[in-house]
Length: 606
Image 1 (tube, rainbow, N blue to C red):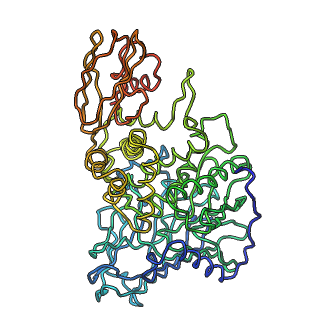
Image 2: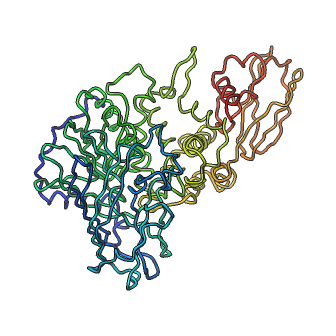
Image 3: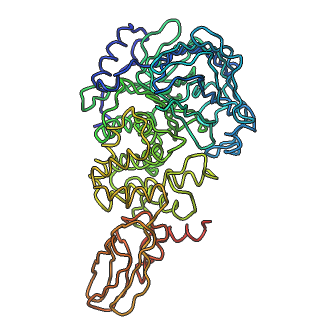
């Protein structure tokens, strides 16, 4: 059905500004009056891309309101591209000059030429080195405090020098991903503090919502995709998005384009606009299929996608360092240049499904990705698996080996528990390595959510996560909001006994077989999570299942005949147990691929 969805030719570049009025009217109806109770902040951005030097000549005109409870005597901005200025920045020290296997091989920076607040020059006296050797933050002192509730006009001129494609931004030949490219105000908290931080090696972003208007000038014949809906063409390309918390664009002279329109449950239509290199047509159809299905799937669970457009950029071969990254109403995917249906599903569809999921987590709920990366990557990782299973079946997101269906997400989760890592609730910059970060934030968070789904019900779990996503849209929540949503569905015991200990303290539930003698056995639960578990016993009398309640630490039981074999958790509901090899006694051992993989990972792991 998705392959037969209507395709549309690219819209005319000439649109009247009245389209913006229509879009805003739709937004008001979708978001609800509460999201627009106050006048929106506004970023009016101008960007002229010089592809010969990979430089963006920019200007930002910002209308910004002090929505805290106290007067402010300074402003703090992020200057993210300065993370790539040299080897001594916080990002480079923490990442050791690599991300996702890509090595840093060229400089990038952002230079502020002038900064005025209500017409007064404030660049002189500002401080752009709040941490020695790192210029990714800018503190701007004010001559007069900004009272609570008052607005100011900020005017900034700057030049952004893009690095060779690396860490979410940069260029590869003529392909440009212009992201984290402008001076952006740090998130202002209610108490008047700014959530300002350097660009960390494993951290991402956090900002207030605003109306963004972006005007982009590129050489004649170049194609541009950006955050927001295009509202005019002529002197540059103009895009408008509201409300969003970031703005990025992609540009290349060889981009080919396709569109597909999807109608959501609300009746709103979304124009999926995909930009891709020549020769990628087969893969593009697959990206469109996954995105169209995902908009409906995620919308059903977490609330409809609220923007009229969604732009996807497919990077050329060799540009993976800037692939697989999300921005509001825009994401850069990755993957092979041709659709290969015989490949494992995760290799074909996963990046597109994952980056689309980020439109909800963190795009719409807008969590602090540095402080709580599990609310961004972890929840998206679990949601990605759910979409892939809807598209391909329960075990369609993995491989078939020796007659066994093996879920790729489950293998990843098994591997995560075979190594040491801090709890998922750890801030991004406190992980010592990227492997720790990935194992904990992505795999362990999704393992915990999946354990709840398998143990206490998938529909209840999706309702709880959907409640969180809908209630917290545009709210910048922390973990307590997630815990509250699960408690509303399951009861207060869920956060007290399961979610909080698992996510914030690293608690697990591991059932150990202590003895099997005749027709009796004894198992013991290690770890603090009260996960009820089935014990499957095989004897001459047949196969019996005995429930090990989550409230018990030890279970002693007997069956009607001498035990031939025993295995704990035969349905693999508890994914927090990283050593499945000690859960099997007897002839079942050679027949459980997950147990064998778990044993191997435990043996070779740190």
